Amino acid sequence: MGIAFRFFTFIFVVSFLSFSSDAAMPTEFKDWFPAEQRVSIRSMFKNISRTDAAPGCVVASPSKNNPNYFYHWVRDAALTMNVVLEFYKKTLYPESKEAAMKRLLEYAAFSRTNQLTNNRSGNSDDLSGFGEPKFLADGGKFDGDWARPQSDGPALRAITLINLARILIQNGQEMYVRENLYDGLVPSNTVIKADLQYVGTYWRAKTNDLWEEVNGDQFYTRMVQRKALIEGARFADEMRDGEAAKWYRGQAQAITAEIGRHWNPANGRIYATINQVGGLRTKTSGLDTAVILAVLHGDDGDGFFGPTDERVLSTAYQLKREFIKNYAINHDEKIPGIAIGRYPEDTYDGTDADFVNGRQRETFGNPWFLTTLAFAELLYKAETDFRNAGQIKITPYNLAFFQDLLPSDQFDPGMVISAGEEFFNRVVQALRISGDGYLLRVAYHLNRETGAMSEQFNRQTGIMQSATDLTWSYAAFLTAAWARPTVNDYLYQLTR
Image (tube, rainbow, N blue to C red):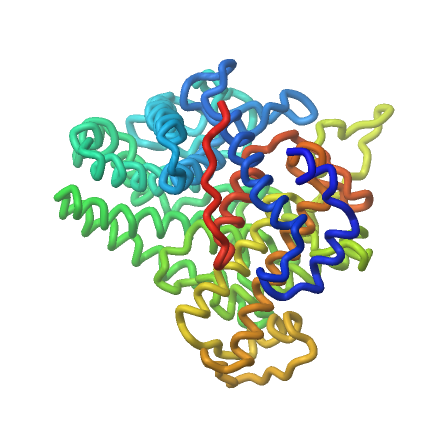
């Protein structure tokens, strides 16, 4: 790694902001950007099928105390393995493809074991146990108190394994898919079919959010459930399971109608939770980066609450402004980019040391690597989508977002900026530069010697804290990096 990290200096991160094209990008960034991808790939793989865990288990972090994240979270694992699948498609090295596929198949088998493990969320017979958020690293059930159920995991797992199934079929392994992933039966003996049955059956039920703090109707969960059912319908058609495909599409349409209720036109915000029935009551603003993650993980490419949606951009702008106010490290203009947390009222600081000298201490939430990277990915995808659309429409809801993006330019509601205009090029380039700013913020706070990322970095000092080597942090870096327009694909052999 050497120079890529040891000489990643304060001067570099500040100087980068003055560059407006990839051609002018400083050498240090060009060195760091691919180097951090290598680090993220290696670090992510280290947390999959570890020697101290069952094959196919994806531990959220190797941290076992302060806090203990040595569990297989269904949601985190599904998101991570979808990145492993993307790596499988990108890498040119046979050894890397083999290693990635081995872990993917182990994950599929481990997931079926999770489905069949009765737990405190329920059992496998009526699928209610699928809402269990996490399992022990050896595959056993977790019996402690927790936020149950969490219904996003099965939807994300179905999306990932549908992607895997298609690759396996292309590789001539349709029989494996029919026997292990999608058998077309009800009740099903296979993981994808069972997950889709759960999603279609239970999506109306209240669930806990992805931060495991609030129970109600969740924007994030509904977005990924919608995508799972749409993808499930397409895949069911491919597997000649027409009746199931029809049912999946019907449930997806019903979810679509409900998702719109999360939008509040009065304040231009998408609410992460509505119809709350339990959990924390302190999230009064309604602002939550879970909304941005929902767009990234639930976008089906049909424009429904996609990266360029005026409602999404309005919400993103308001989140950014709140985190600028909340975090002292965002007040130092010499540090590039903006650090992003979960939601403005957050008090979780990522440690178990909630008591000092027998008294509960006051804690404050911090920026997270994965949420900061989510903003980078959102802006990169928005650039791509605007370029593909060939125009940008300015509305009363997205006006503040674009004024913040290019404060020296004039934007007016009703304005249509078309491809081919110099102004269009300036706007989409500004999206990429702004996205790069979030990457630079991450680069400033990670371990510059090793490239390691934890869960959080402190809002006052910027020093990393909470769970070390968070798997989702590395997966989020890779999805952001690979979403960056015009970037060359960095295809690396997996270091085992």
